[in-house]
Amino acid sequence: MRHIEDLRDIYSGEEIWVVGCGPSIGDFPKGFFDDKIFIGLNEAYLLFPNCTFNCSIHGHIWDDVKQNHPALLEKLILCYPQFTDELAKTHKAWQGSNEKYAHDWRLNWIEDCGDKPIYMKWYDSHPFPPIDEIKKRLKIVVESIVNKVPTIYPSLNTVSHAGIQAAMILGARKITLAGCDEASSKDGTHTYVEIFNSFPPEWNAKNEVAAGLLASERQGNMGSWYIRARYGTRCLVEVFGSYGFDIQKYFIGEGYRRIV
Image 1 (tube, one colour):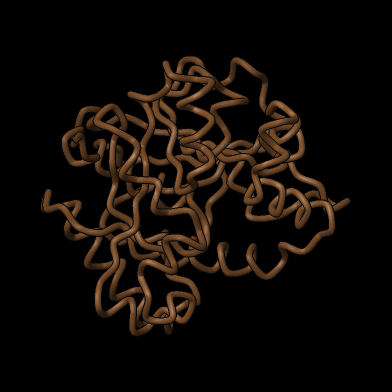
Image 2: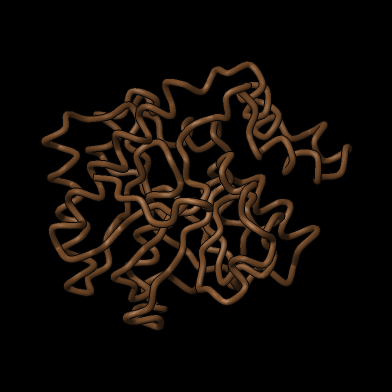
């Protein structure tokens, strides 16, 4: 098995882009990222197949890549959950049962992924712990990355946080987010609609995770998720920025935008 730490510093000193599927990604020309080092998030590989890497926390991504995009396997960063006694006690969604959590969220797919992908130890802080606890955990993570010590990498309601930390491990000090809007467009739709429609109909019919996300986007029911994700991003940028990591967003027509 390959782990994200096996690729440590291969892009030392480079700018690495983390590319999501938010509404603003539709403003980017198709060839915009071709000369860039970039990590796509979840279904972004369908929009930008020339990604340097693609990072996901969802089993349905693995299903599609394995069946329809096997050339992407060696570029796929798969975040797999790390269940600890501490998290099992504090994470309400787990209800003290790691197996139940893995089953309900389709996170037990990891054993079927073989040795081609790149694995990244991960956990999702949801619901949020107190802000002091968030910053304490993030400080442990950034110090582990700086000191080149493997750890467990948290996300706070968005896979972009895993992508940012992967970019840091790969050696980037400047990390630029594109399409990581943490917001829907004004009519409640999302680039995810375009992505969903690119899958074969028979695949979508059995993909409850993707269908649920799409329905939530169309109904405008993702507001609380976006608020938590934005809050988590600000905490992450604040803590990681104090260690010299420059994390900003980028928008066509505007350029770089500071997050904090």
